Image 1 (cartoon, rainbow, N blue to C red):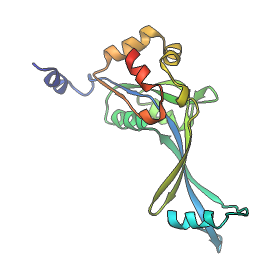
Image 2 (cartoon, rainbow, N blue to C red; image 1 turned 90 degrees about the vertical axis):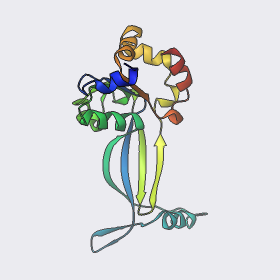
Image 3 (cartoon, rainbow, N blue to C red; image 1 turned 135 degrees about the vertical axis):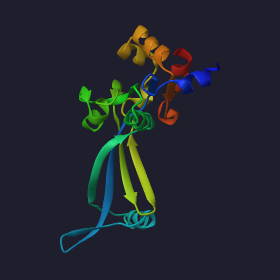
Image 4 (cartoon, rainbow, N blue to C red; image 1 turned 120 degrees about the vertical axis):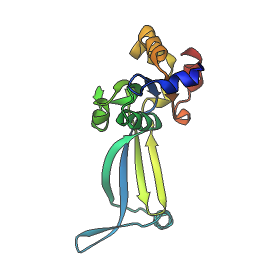
Length: 187
């Protein structure tokens, strides 16, 4: 029987996943254009937002931000959370902490799968418009996350055990992890 056939024949509850390595707290934001009769009117599109910014050239301006929600983000956590909701047992390595404990946006996910935090969660301010979004990111510990830091947080043997147990390994969001090649070479 081929390896693929063997994996496909497994019950989802015996199939095990290992997902990582990023983690973001996404703050969804709308930019206020005006307030009419106590109701906030949001800037509708990116072009309108751009014109507002260009109009501030050579002077100062202020824009009110209307926070819509905080939610979990990052390719790894979104994938892990989706698979865990489908019942796949898994561990997720990533950036989940704030002030030394799991950030609240990851708490519900922590009830579905094992979270192993490697560094503080990165942040995204997602300015949403009708025609798209602009995302401003603060990378926190992701740019410096390397194999040694993972080993320091998890341990060599526990890390090896995670990879050996996994039927599925998905380490996502290479763009925010400059040391990903080194991580892959060492795991």
